[in-house]
Length: 116
Image 1 (cartoon, rainbow, N blue to C red):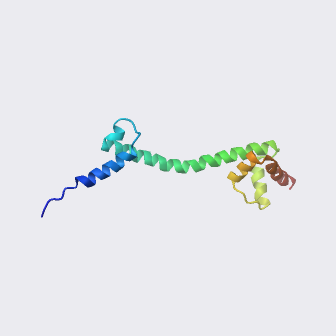
Image 2: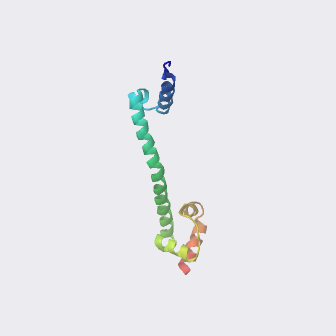
Image 3: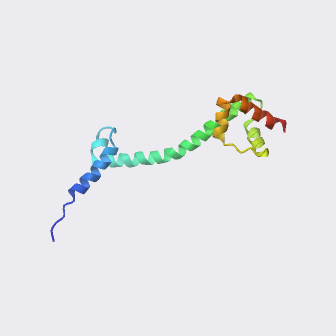
């Protein structure tokens, strides 16, 4: 049986990985072993970051809503509780957008909740 040389397959795999590490510093971009270690680490951080991003933005939305509620003289927790009591289903991102771009509409919401 003849011998099969697999250099082309390995080269293709290495080139694909090294293409992803373009822009890394030093050996991390051009030495396969170092590049692979760094890329695996970078991909892991990217995966974690995609989950943290959701948490961070939720916190930002809550801070914005809370600030807008304080201007209308109501606490954030009472505002959210009031929304649930009045069966108003609107997510925090949209409430945040309302507070920033439509402060009049947001004030009407807080007044509606404060009355009850």
